[in-house]
Amino acid sequence: MWYQWNVLATLNGVSMKKDIHPNYYPEARVECACGNVFTIGATMPKISVEICSKCHPFYSGKEKVIDTAGRVEKFRARREKGATTAYQTKTAKRAKRAAAKQEA
Ligand SMILES: [Zn+2]
Image (cartoon, rainbow, N blue to C red; front, side, top):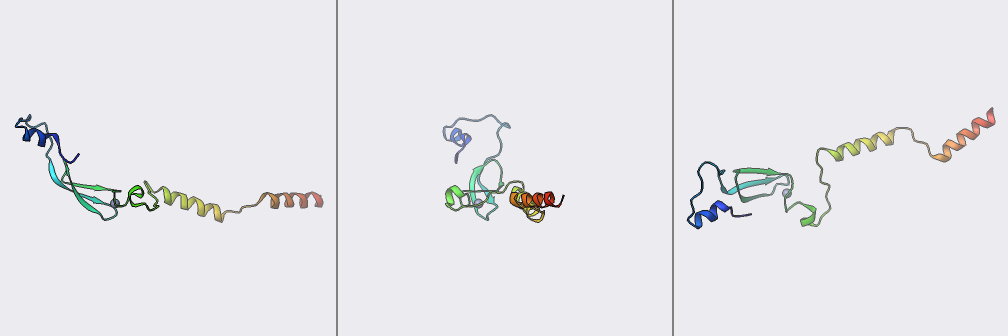
């Protein structure tokens, strides 16, 4: 909502209760993690966000990994661990077992 009901109330000449409404900043500064900065009406003078309409894949049309709480890093670490640990295919295992049988 770009207008707040206290603005409407002022327009209508209705007085509001004192000390129960937060301060309204008509030009609050919003900073996104992508570097985009815009102003909105809010009750906080400054807001920082992780994603905005400039960088959200839905609006930008670009595919992008939205990483919250380092999940991408966790996945990469798991993948690397899996790549370094010895991995045998089923056929390799079967061949090894057959060789052991022949020796015995
Ligand atoms: Zn953004």
